[in-house]
Image (cartoon, rainbow, N blue to C red; front, side, top):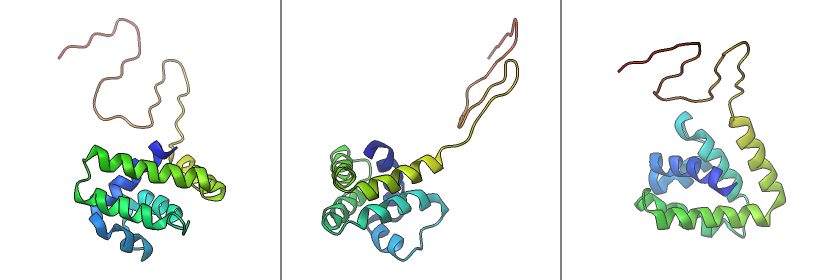
Length: 130
């Protein structure tokens, strides 16, 4: 679950840098980082873990692509999720609510929650040339 949370938090850190903590606490996060901000707000509610999580976020803001800093953030998130059943439950609800409701109905129909490029073909004897 921490692996599902960290990309959203990383997006918030990437958008606001070290100032993300104050921005989400002020409720000023915009739509591009709303999910990451909401997850981070929930995780920061655990006072015992908040300083370490804040430090991991601040460190990641220095270099959001640094895999070591990302791993530390993921570890901090994982520790909180393991330690606090209520926060874990809330995070699960947030993550589940973010999943698109996608269904395909009918013969040869196609459903995708997200697609960026590529080709989808249904039917007999289809020919694709590029």
